[in-house]
Amino acid sequence: MTDTIPDRLSVDPDSPFYDEALLARGIGIRFKGVEKTNVEEYSISEGWVRVAVGKTLDRRGKPMAMKLQGPVEVWIKDDQAPA
Image (cartoon, rainbow, N blue to C red; front, side):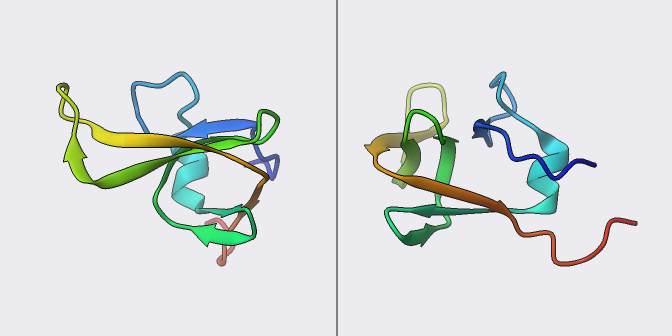
């Protein structure tokens, strides 16, 4: 496993930016100085996060999301050593 954080990552398995192994390790995201736990996707270089909006679903059954612009900080939580 690598400790390189991707520029863009998504929790949607249908997305080309999905990385199951990295998500299993745990990702911490700080947006505008506040740690967020409801981020669906982020882009560090473009400076945005896509966050879930309540429990509302779109017509395909996926959570509705809102794109917010601002500084994004990302780190790997990975408290325990990999087995």
